[in-house]
Image 1 (spheres, rainbow, N blue to C red):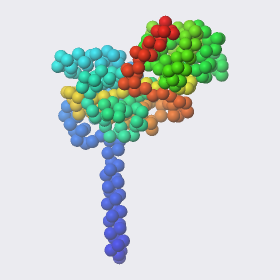
Image 2: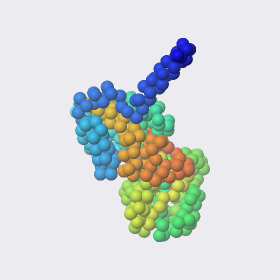
Image 3: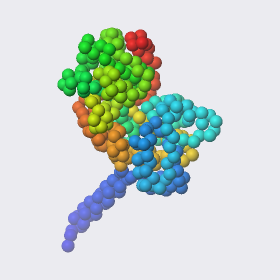
Image 4: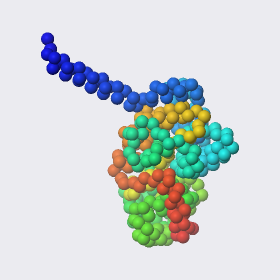
Length: 348
């Protein structure tokens, strides 16, 4: 027979194990009460900036299969999404429940339209990819680096540093998106100024301006396509996973882990007056969970969750062992006018 001390110890240990199991149970799973409330609402409206065929559809399919809640989505760019939600709110006809985008949240947050709430799964994310006030969290990363045509610049001969971009052999052979965006000239300028400081950064950009970088009027993807076509040898600001996608299809292209890279966050938020508030919360919980982030990885997006690798793990700064500057939506929105002013001075 066990003594009373042994019996008591076993009881305490048993209670401890039970408590541990109970506390561990919710990890990776939404709160049952939230699930029940969301199912009563039956649907959720997602205003998204993501590519529908590549990401929105597989995320929607996985969420609907898991919870039986209908997802209705509408796609537009970050600015268009913000304007649409602001107009709907002003007219008292808000349709969206949840939205994403690189800078969409900033004007909506300023007008009080964003719910201050993040799921428990947000605890797994580092501080640099979530709002300290709790209004947004990144659902994927856009890692922006140079990309080059491997037929025009042999592997091993590509520029590896910012200083290398000043090589006279590259004059007139580089291009970027000439719009004031993080994936264009604005983001490159912001990264340089953040890295070098105002004085040294401005001096460097003045010299880079002499390289006659082509200002293309298209997206970073379109700039990369022109590099692949041989119109230019090098693109200064491209999404590094786009180079991987194209290379897998046989295109003569690769990306350069030039330090520091620019990392822009695509963030997710719930609207404060969402008609399907619980379903919106549940969709956010699903998207930032490991399960949801694995859908992002399979769709060749770069997951924001630190424990979920990209399809090619080295696309992420930590796994690829290259430095990057992470810019929040607020930092991008606040500083872009200054970065654009520098662009106008040296690159017009």
